[in-house]
Length: 345
Image (tube, rainbow, N blue to C red; front, side, top):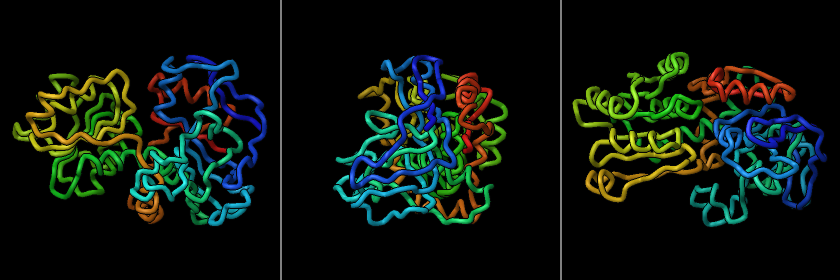
């Protein structure tokens, strides 16, 4: 089969690799029909990773059709149309039962270790019963991009909003205008935020954010951004901050714009981030939460809104390509010429 492999910074190749196959009784095999390039894929693309001689299998977001199942799989059947969250999980351990599937004791993340990537013609799914989510068949192709976002970016934006304690009538700020940040705007609006402030700098992304429900736009950075948010909130700051970038600057901005007693939901993969133990976290009584989104826990809640057209997170895909075009998709996203690339098979 063919799959995207990363061999070093900026070096993504589509290659022939061994066919995905059932290895364990709890596995399923899916034929990928839609996959995507994630913003987090750009970290190794920019050199923040260790590379093996054989390369890294890339991709952790996919929807597709089940081609085979292991002998112990009970809830997933051959022919099912399914969503594959970016982490696999058994669905039964204490952490899964608590809704934190990304900490499953038998789980892990796609594209890491022995599990292949989703930017491929097929992929093996460990712990299929606890991982895969069956989707309705016969859906219009127009809804496919939004379904795909449930496997990561929409679920991650929702996780940021949940952990930032967004609630009706409150003020939320979203730090970052990438796909996750834009989905965070959708999530904050969906959970009832009265005011949604989007911090970003790309005009096309900010326009999309406004269409998703952002009421205010802040293009400044650093102290100027903090001052602008204070102006927009009567000097108090915001109740909820969705930190969707993962840099030290974005985290410091989040800390500074949160009002006393506020909450920060951090979902940007952190790189060289320092969170002070005293000021402002301690003296402002801030709650800091978040982490890898348990997408498996959220898909059931978000799916009806996608199917009924109440939210359209698939609009974050502004570059459509096929498997051969994956390297170009990485380049476009790295150069900020595209928000997010979707791969059609």
